[in-house]
Image (tube, rainbow, N blue to C red; front, side, top):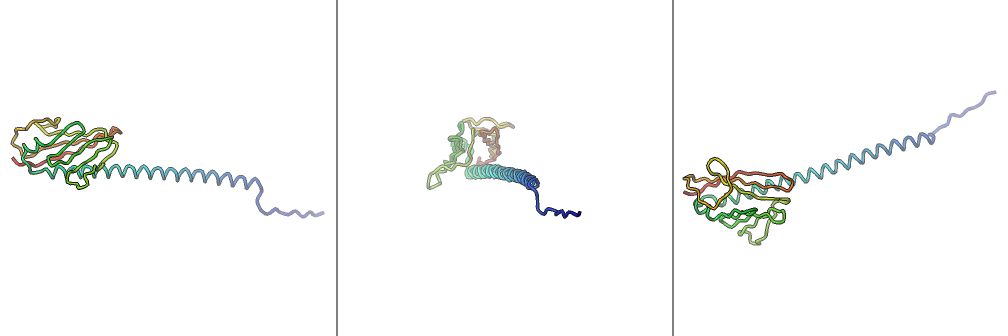
Length: 173
């Protein structure tokens, strides 16, 4: 006697469960990958903003020093104010660390508001060139005949990073 066996068409329950398990594992890996890419992108954006802030801060600071070029050296040194976390130029431009922000106030700004240049700043430091090294700024007039003044500006961040800029000011004798 001949039996007719039918070959079943379709898939079994075990096959369905195995394919769902594989699909869920692949989906979980893809979701984790996308989440990591997103957090990496956010970190990159944050680092990029920080670098733009640093660049903009030093560009504006250079401009403030340049606006004070070609003053008499004695006049420049007598009228610049350098204290802990405070720098006031002879023309009135003011840099200060307030509430962990580096702010700039310019009297030439008609709105007279403070511009926050950088955040998470711990300390602002200015040193002056004297006898082959940078020293703390003192309220004294340097007697040398040079018409150039060298400054070292350091910005210390809360994250233990520091940024330094060397600036040369041309003075009149």
